[in-house]
Image (cartoon, rainbow over the protein chains, first blue to last red):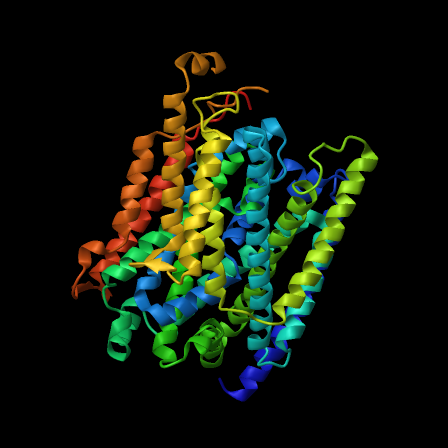
Length: 500
Length: 73
């Protein structure tokens, strides 16, 4: 990138970011005015009244984190065309919702759920199962929030040519997220998600069009990849295919279990609204993920020979190239650059909101607050927890530990073990002895978590390309089914009939 | 506690079809070796793209046609 354009882009990016941050605070204040009650339900679920447009965009923003925008092109750069598999992965997450969300949504209305654990408490009423699930959700959210804060620091530093250092990006971003989240709760988060989703969609569409004009059509780009790095255009080998299959299973079963995604399900205005939003979501990866994968493929052509750390910045290198070579790309580049920051912030704010609600509600007493004073006290507690969590994680993020993708996979290995509790658990009632019981679910969870932990600790993160978590969840489901079968075989028929 | 065991659920055949399409997206059938290309893109990629579109259509269709409202809602 030539210096005058780089300097102008860097300066305008900073101005745009400042404007975006101001807009976020205004949205936070606006959301605070729209608040209907000083309760945790209103703060975390926006009064269960999110309509189609905002629900779609907030689900979109939840599914497409900063990792999707900066990590996916980097992965495409390193792995080549085979990374197109990330497109069906994202469709797979929507398919994964189908396994339990229709029943979960119906139950959430009847049971007035706020956190994902409310379902487990309602369905199984078992303390150990409840606390293990809460611990897994908290671990996952801390992991995810930490990864977003690190991504924020890297993105800000990269986009400003390190004029703003990594630490300032982490701390500044954390402070802004905290302010508007405390002000407006889920409404503020969902509205900012909608703003981010719209700007990203428009910016990406224009960028892809300009990449085709300036660099070449997908076919031309692939032809050049075959000349520069033929291994990146080759048919994936068996081990890679098994890894894809395993990742597909991890994401389809684990993706819908993100607490922030489940809370958006609870927050939908109606089942009809939710159905329509998810149906549209099934098509979005075809455009959004394909666009970022194409950006990574273009990166192979434009910047061959980058090392893994440099390839993590490929999105910004490609954007910088485009802004320099085509004046029409300047504004769309700026929009996408700000949208990358916005995507990271929107994922982080969703994690924070979910984390504070779980820490407030699932680790404390289970008695529901009744009086207005108790409800306000619960909300105040959630706010203080948000502040404390953000301070701890922002401090941790100042010392980067591992790569973003490494964090993501470790998180899924654990989160996915909750799948049987939701998928099989939602299919039966607590008082039906033929339905899966807490013992069935606990035995499966023990086997799944144990298997994954042993594999990871002993350095066998993958077996013939298959993730330890995928193997763990298969054993988890098998154990749950065997446990139920044994229980029904050993329980007298009369007892089963009576309980029914 | 009210019995909420029979909430909306999807036919097993439909879920099995989704799983089969998902497995078919991964280009096992093209291993090993190089495949031809069309419009510059390798055939294994075209196959994955086409099946991904099919998966999206099936998922959206299932959400809209098979997920019925809970009558108690």
